Length: 125
Image (cartoon, rainbow, N blue to C red):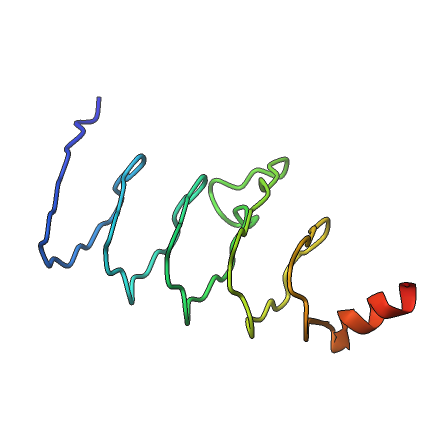
C-alpha cells in the first residue's frame, strides 16, 4: 500500500518538480503557477476558477492515442464545460467540436473556417 504524505505550503516560494506522483484531491488556492508545464497527466474533473490563462496552450487534449499503453478504443472523452470565460481572440485549431453547444455567448466576430457566424444566423431569421 502506498504511503500518502500531506504537504502544506503557506506563504512560501518554492519550485516543485514532480514525477510519477499522485496529486488527486489536492487544492491550490491563491497561487502563482505561471510558466507551469503539465505533461502526460490525468486532469479529469479538474476545476479551475478565477484563473488568468492568457497565453495558455492546450494541446493534444483528449483520450490516449493508439500508441499509448493506456489506450482504450472504447473509451469516450467526457464533455468539458467552459463557463463565464473570456475567450475573445482565442483560436481553436484542428479540434473535434462535434456536438458542441454554444449558448448565451457573445459571438461578435466569431468565425468558423473564415465565415462569420453572425452572417449565417442573419440569413436564418
